[in-house]
Amino acid sequence: MTAASPSKPSTFGRPCPRAARGFSLIELMIALAMATAVAAAALMTSVQIGRAMSDTRRRVIVFDEAKRLAEALISEFQQSGGNPLTPQSSLIVNNGTCSPINGQTPEATIPACDGHDRILVTAVRTTFIDSTGRERPLSSCEVESVNGAVLKLRRDGSLCSCLFPESPAGRGNADDEPSPFSRTLVMLVRDNGTLQTLRVRGTVSGCAVNVPPGGGNPPTSALSTGSIVPVTQRLFFTALDPSLPGARQLRVWTDVAHGGSEPDGQPSIDEISLVADHLYSFQIALGYDAGDDGDLLDRATRDDEWVGNVPVDTRPANIAADSLLRMVGVGVVVGERANQAVGARVFDGPQIDQPGIYMTTATTKVALRNLNVSVP
Image 1 (cartoon, helix red, strand yellow):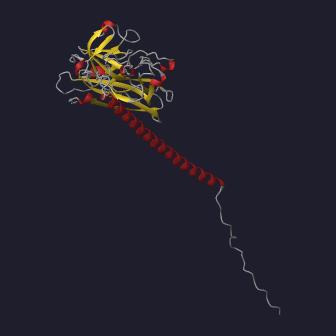
Image 2 (cartoon, one colour):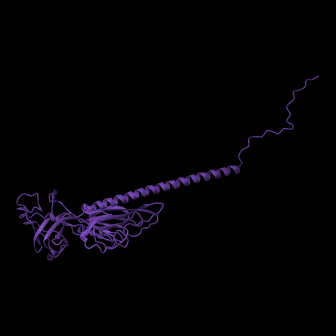
Image 3 (tube, rainbow, N blue to C red):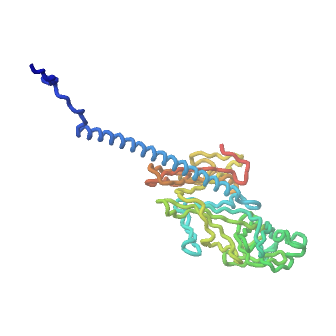
């Protein structure tokens, strides 16, 4: 009898084993689409956050720029004047409307105001550079008499001390050295307080200076006794800024002597410098102490004691004289490219709106020469 072979397990009636099941193409496409949507949403959120942060940084930067500019200007304006100049003669404002000033070249021509203000700041000068290049003191001189175009100045003993306070005894009596006044701008402050610009071309001889008529000088009939004061004048104005649409630059012109020639009253390229760019409005307000009581009423209406601080502003009827000028205010609108455009207005300037530009304002006001006034 033959031995039986080992029997094999029977698979009859059992399901056959299957390989592990994978994702179908449709499932993969759905998952990929969902992942893409999530990634896109995350990217969009990141971009929006980045833009918001960028705009915030730009706003902070442009606000700081506007604030620094306003404070720097107000500090310079506050230091204007000096004895015997008065505040009203030290700050002359063109309120939004003024003509161009022809320069020596077209590039040096100062444009019209075009809605921006223009301010001429005058300050007494205390030094000059002599022919040897040394800085020497210079002070005001009293005009004792006028003979034609010759102004005879006060003598201090044997010296004309207002011209050469450090000179040896006797100098100034018959001296052919060019007048230091020929190297700076000179204002004649008449006895009645009015001003006249002089350009001295003569020499010092016996404490006298020669201001011949013509070339910017007044006729001899306009000369009178008073004081002649060496000054510096700086004209702040706006011109086109090519770096941003609709923007202006704030520039300053200082009329200075060139070599042996006196200031000529005509702008040249080397006399103009840049103060700030990205400017959209430059406005000046003047405060008058109408009651002479030490308080300047400042409010957003036209019946206060300020001129130029609100739109369509005119000189209030209760301000009787320019001698009541006590304060000055500066307002600027500065802009920068941003995703969210925001317009602005300052003082009595126009409303400024420029696509793609975010703008901010800065204003500040201060008493002139630390006069004892307040703003309630």
